[in-house]
Length: 350
Image 1: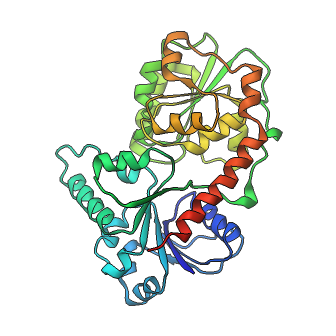
Image 2: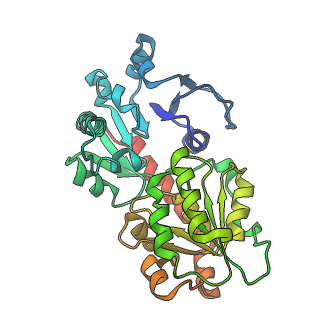
Image 3: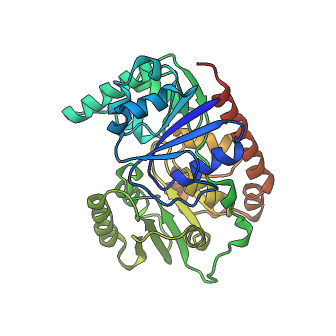
């Protein structure tokens, strides 16, 4: 069976390609990457095609390639929606849309923006024309339906990285032995992290000795500047913005050095960061009215709510709670489950 994947060139792209090449070699995978050519660190470079932009999908040779597929998966319906919405019907009806989160949640409210309204209507057309929907976690399909009512075939399948680069979190330990509480907040310089709201929420609940770091190495430059200015204004020398991209091991070591993770997003975001913090035995605070809360609680993780942060300040996990969160079976069981979830997608009839 020939599966064509269409995915933007992002930090997740190499891991996505590796994941399917290694876990599902029985399929004939072709990867169309939207973006400039990049020397990805992947298991092999077979069947990878780069397009400068998504409009190139309309070229005759690329349409022929899409027509040859038994199934197409668009992972991340961002700008590609403007092309997919007007592709031939026989291509659309064998295409599954793998939503990342921001590619649908940003249309929850369009205000007076004509650009946003048009984007919403194009997204609606894509959903109506596609074969089915794939979400990253449970609960997101219902969120999509609240914005774009539909009765499409739908699946849940996570975005996992390369099996070749699976991390052993047991080798990472804090490099500090002092009474400073180190907090990391958010995962990127994107407004859906809601840094400014989080700052106001936690500013009066912090201990005397703390460092508050914010990973801001990618995202929106103007928003990054706003977060840094506000962070410095509220927290002064306690605030440490991280603006340079770190190699993965260095970034995990940064998380291992932290005691607490705070994630104030109202939608699924920063799942990789949250999972890493939990697997490292760290205390994580998130909103309890989100699909992320349900996702982690259903898997047996122990988290704290932002309401608890407000009422009692920081309460670190007990040793017993850390043991529950870091049990190796939890990770291995989820990895096995993820393969089963993707099998359902790949074997679904169109």
